[in-house]
Length: 409
Image 1 (spheres, rainbow, N blue to C red):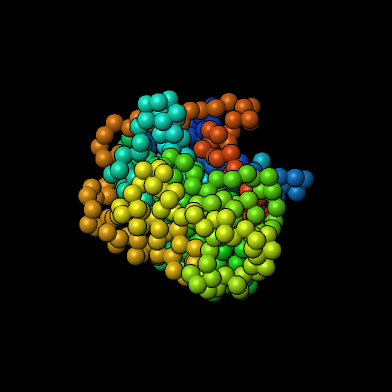
Image 2: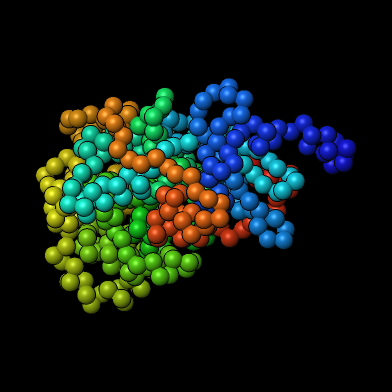
């Protein structure tokens, strides 16, 4: 590239620090860098935005292909329940990329944590029924849009489900963190070969834990079922220890044990394809002699303990999400037409808070040096330590960035 043209372009390119005020307004740490709350310096609007800083690492100042992947997808996605990418700023001097996205005051991780705390304080305040229904409906609406456009999210969990606070989009769900998302229309190679481990453990479908190579939209549906159960009970339904979270092996004995302790052991008559999964022999060798010990467990038994009746519309829909056989799992399209939303009152609302005062604390700004609390303040669970879906990194140069942003995934 002509050096004079390059210098001229750099002078004309708008800089994020000239347009937005964000110093001292750090609100957390994402997968690839810091996140700041920002406002326009010229006052042209009074909206709050989130600035997501993606920093290069190492001597070569490379940055994650997951970040490229997220930007490439968000540039093309437009839906009320998917986070909106307003603009990308490239800073060649200090090798940084800034993403300007919607700012959301709340997320499901903090909302569920709030209700769990009220129960522990002996002043239980369960998540309102109409709020649970509205949250679930909007999550499904966003996921149906992604799936209809051949996109798998692959990392659905409460921390990645944002909820807008006061303002024009009050109470609207925004599905965020698309770094694990992938197109799945005609993969050139098995998805599991590209990304051997996806979805945070507690929300990972059983077929992933058993090494499925060509997994489907059903993995997102399982994760939505886990989130739904958590909204109903204020407890993660499949929580377990995370000792080998850095492993690139999808099989996880403790996580499978937790699923079986809630759901019971899968029967071959109910899941005919289980024998074809790569880790089936490992499953039988480790659990074959103790299958009978799970015979008294079922989803109905678990939810009844949490005061969710097995004859309720909520439970019947949950059961359709948390079906072991992915080929029998409900789709997002069918779930949106379920009796839980269509026939049972209250109906889902565009404002999940239903016009009521919002009881949840607002996000707090944190000091730049306060690294220990970054993840908590960003709304990340303790177990949110999963590696990026691909270990590849790309050198932060103009050509590489533009190529990565424009290529089909």
